[in-house]
Length: 339
Image (cartoon, rainbow, N blue to C red):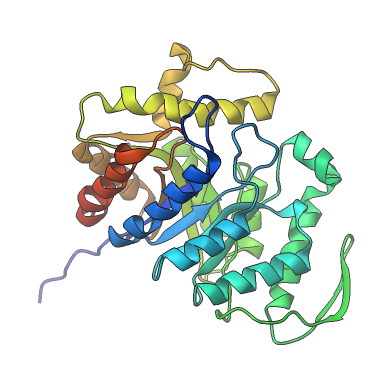
């Protein structure tokens, strides 16, 4: 009897749903919300497994500040695709409310909700919410502790540095007996946190070498008896039109520029600087269907079994038929052909 080669499984998600409307856009925030909600059934139909919703606060372009309402809306527009916060900023949430809102979305979606968390990083957000940035790690770890208790069959008894509860019984409970919790971050401490107190690690764009190193660290630290996951998001655009990079690069740079400005406090040029173009392109999956398929296969071959790619197809400023066609092509020409 001949042995069949093992099949490497790749998982594909869509996101990040941020609902941003760049200055000067013809769209209104309401129109962008509806466009992305209308996109979700298409993404489900072409094979995406999960949709991830992201948050930030007090941003000029209206970066989505409320992940739970949008996740609830996605739950009503889909039937099989799982829905996650990718990522909710943990220090800004009261744990009981987070537990309750998560349970409601899990009930609305019939057990399809997956919260993802990060410790946060932009000073204006911490200042506005009155949370000491130096305590962002204990805020996050205590939130996770409380969530685990809140979704169990027992009342919460918790005496933390920040939060204390005595006999609080959160109702109703989620549909899922064990709600998976993802943790994002860019440093080794975040990878270890995801491996030890979470159920999955959520990576931002980085080099393939660095991602492989983080994956090895995650696997070393994770409890092999627990179901775990390892995901990365990447700026993504697929088109049959000529010059795909020329179409996509400003949309991707718009996001990358924001992240640089938030991290450094230094304004960045609106147009992509030539010296930044190479690094940005390394963080993207952009091209014809055949080119993007080859790029995904390279990552699959390097990262191995159960690799999860979050295709950030919902680039700010990309809308209309080009957005929908990019999602269709990714499903039909990439998801269906990666083996």
